Structure formats: structure tokens, C-alpha cells
Image (tube, rainbow, N blue to C red; front, top):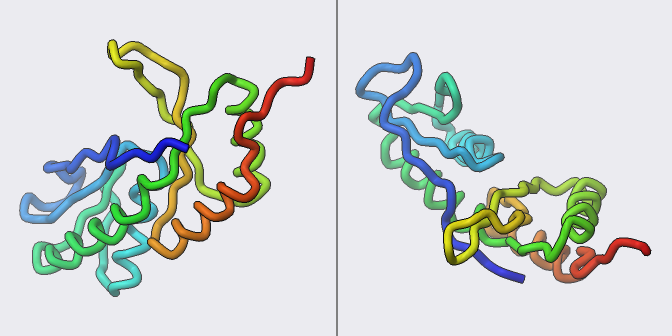
Length: 149
């Protein structure tokens, strides 16, 4: 299993219909905004969705937004693998759906920056969820699945 650090995270400076002073964050990664919203809700911080993705908070909640991002980053990017082929990719997607996991297939690039299939990513919102998802992945994911001939 390949582990990856933070990818696809883009901090946004403009905030759709929010005021110029608002603190806005988001990412193009699937489920990132949902994970950020989870942590803001846990902290009791009111937030607004941005047009086109991302979330904004009042500037007085800047420390809470930073902490929400920190908590999410501890878990969000931690479980990834590079399927060998389309058969393994489909098997992993089917498994993740059956298990009710948040997953994403993200384009992968080779060392020459050329397309090289996909990364299969399991998205966790908390460290505890990530540990449970990693154990589930290690125990039962169909790694190395092959197509039937």
C-alpha cells in the first residue's frame, strides 16, 4: 500500500458570495469540504458554503478554522494505493461501496508527469476513523484482484 501526503489541497482566497474579510478554505479533493464541515460542526463554528465549493467562516473563527484543517489533515490523505489495472480498481471500488467507505479515484502521474492510471484513496475525517479504515483495508480489501479469464 502506498501512502501519500497532502494532495489536491488548494486554499482558496476568494469566497463566492461572502465578504472579503471571511476566512475561506476548501479543496478539489472529493469529501474534503464535507470533512472540514464535520470538524467545524464539532467545534460549534458557524460556516457558509462557497459558490463552487469550499467553506467560509467569520474572521473571529480563524483559529477554529485552522484547527479544523489540522484535524482533517491528520486523517484525510493517509490511505492510498495504486491499483495495478482496471480489474483491481473495480474490485476496490466495489469493496469500498459495500463497506460504506468514502473513497475517491484520483488521476495518478508517472515520473515524467504523464497519466498513469488512478490512485484509490479512502477518505477519513478523524484520526480514529482513519485507523479503523486502515485496519479494514489491510484486513479485507481485494488488493491484487485479477479479472476472470
